[in-house]
Amino acid sequence: MLIGAHVSPAGGLPKTIERGVERHCEAIQIFNQSPRMWRGRTYDEDEAAAFRAAMKGSSVRAVLIHAVYLLNCASEDREIRAKSLGSLVNSLRAGAQIGARGVVLHPGTAKTGDARRAIARAGTTIKEALAESEDCQLHLENTAGAGGTLGRTIDELEALLEASGADERLGVCLDSCHLYASGYDIRTRAGVDELTREITRRLGLRRLGSLHLNDSMGTLGSNRDRHANIGAGELGDAGCAAFLGAPQFQRLPCVLETPGEKGKGATGEEVVLAKRLHQRGVRARKRPATARAAA
Image 1 (cartoon, rainbow, N blue to C red):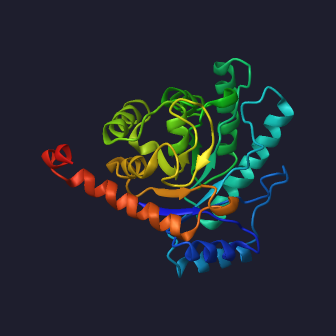
Image 2 (image 1 turned 180 degrees about the vertical axis):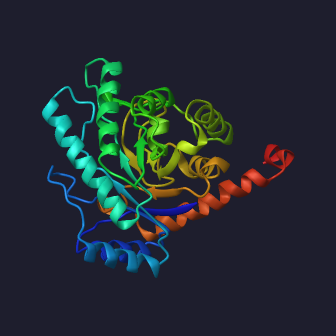
Image 3 (image 1 turned 120 degrees about the vertical axis):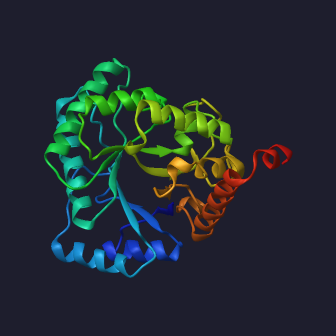
């Protein structure tokens, strides 16, 4: 598992690698454009080359791009869908330029409308975005379930994948906070195993593309998308370790999107803590059943 954090791209692409190294990251996630603006951008060849060179000589082995939060591929408003399509295509093209593992996308929201129709609209937009880009994967992120957001269950992720076509570049990003807030109790090995069985049955393990590790301020099934620092929320150290220890999740890039100190994002200390919890979760899987029961 390649563990790291979301970092700022301020100052240029190579700076993202520098910030990742400072935080002991093996994976980083960035925005390729301002998260508050529709105007998209890709990189020129010099920028992309400088990024690839900086990454080659660093501890960072994987990069994800997060599509901006303005996107709503399921919107009933055609103009919003068109803007979402354009921004998503830009992100996928930018990802291809820098060799990103994938672009992470919140699939959209039905708001108060019919979820099935919203999934169909989102699927059409996503399918077009994949057709207008190449090389870079697209990971649909599960959601906490507030406000009609799509992807709150494995069933909805399956429906979104089906509506978006059979493109091999299409996968999913699992967020630990969102899973818990939407009703999946992943605080124990048994709960994580139940989740991975459902993923295997409904989506297929090949669709697993990336992970977000966030603790949850909200309680189980609260539908509150409120990230907490690792170990400081409802999941706690034990829940985060159980999530990270799943055999099906190993080798995936896993990034923290926690508030950190004073809302400035995950620190190097928190990334190191996540790595320790990962080791704890993996070791627990290797212990004999009798020893686990005694513990």
